[in-house]
Structures are given as C-alpha cells and as structure tokens.
Length: 237
Image (tube, rainbow, N blue to C red; front, side, top):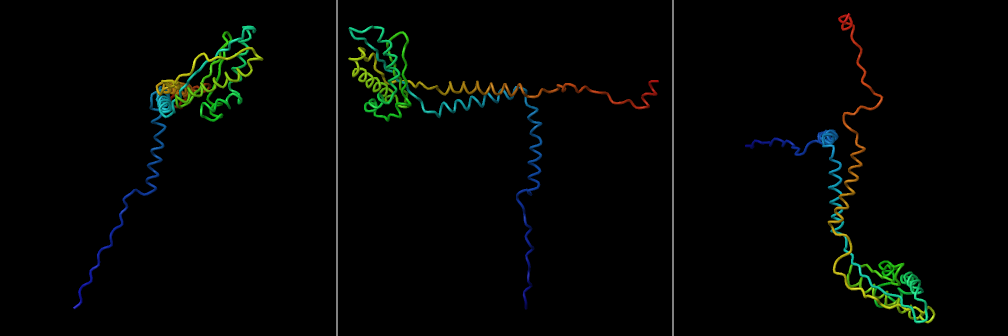
C-alpha cells in the first residue's frame, strides 16, 4: 500500500515593513506640512529660539573651555644720584618694550621652566605714562606656572638693566612679586551664556525684522473687482 502524499500549503510571504513607495509618500506629505506649521508659530518665535540657542551654546563653551589664570609682577625704574629723575620714566618705557624680546625671554625660560615660544605667547607688559613702573603679566592654565613666568621675566629684565646701569644711570628694582592666583581670569559659564544669549537674541531680532508680515499686500497690487454679469446689469437698469 502506498501512503498518500500530503503537501503543505505554500507559506504566504509577509512584509513587515511598508513598501518603499508608501514610505516616500508619507515623507513627502510630512515635508509639505512643515511650511504650514512654521507659519502657525507665534511671530516672536525666532527671537525666543535665538536667545535659547545662543544661551546654550555660550554656556556650553564656558563649561568646556579650559580656565585661564593671570599673575602680574611689577618693577620700578630708579635713577642714580647723578642722573635726571625724569630719565627714569623714559627708560621705564624702553624696558617695557624690551621685556618681551627674545634676549630677555631667553634668560627667563631657565627660571620659568617653559619654552621661549610659551613666554612669547603668554607674557604681556604695560607701562604708565606718569610713573616709571613696568608691569609684567603672564597667563596660563596652571596658576603656579603663571606666577613663575611673570617673576622669571621680571628677574631677567632687572639683570639686563643692571648690566647697562653704568651707561643708562638707571636701574630696575623689583616692586612686587607675582603671587599664585586663586581665581580664574577667564569668563565663567554664566557670563559666556549671557553673551551667547545676547548674540542669539540679536540674530533672532534681525530674522524677525526681515520676516514677511502677514496680511500686508504688496504695493502696486490693488484688488480689482470682477466684471458684472449681463443679468446683474439689466437688473440695475
């Protein structure tokens, strides 16, 4: 006897996901609705969006940026007994310009323990038109390094001034050493956030000004009534 052969019905193929044409149709329909949704937003939405985006970006920059510390030392020009006291002011101006030159920074790197390129990038000097004083300011991410760089530059500057004191009759003396700063000199996250929010609000306000107004007809395009039909004309007669 032969056993009857049974055939299992073919399994119907199932498609879990939608067909690609239907998916593209939904995407296009959603994109068509975007302009309408944008027009339905309040008129002040660009301003609010600019303030919010600018504040978030500014606060994020303040949180991620490395804080910088600033230390300042001072030297004063002292005239010799036989020299004119007014000459000390002029030499103080000259030493303020020399302090950031390679000859001084090359000696300062031995005490600061940093390369000359770092000193050139991080050290600034300032002089006063009324007092024979030179201020040396150094900025670094490490507060101790900032103080060491400022003191090293003033030490090298006073040595250069002492080497030529017989000719200039003016010497430099240290007035105040730089101390290690306890607070960062860079802007905090709150300050950068406020700056970013102000900039974003300005851009949002400009976008609000150039945005086309609703309900305002273009100049030169007045509404013209359509022609009356013949039946209406006879009725009026």
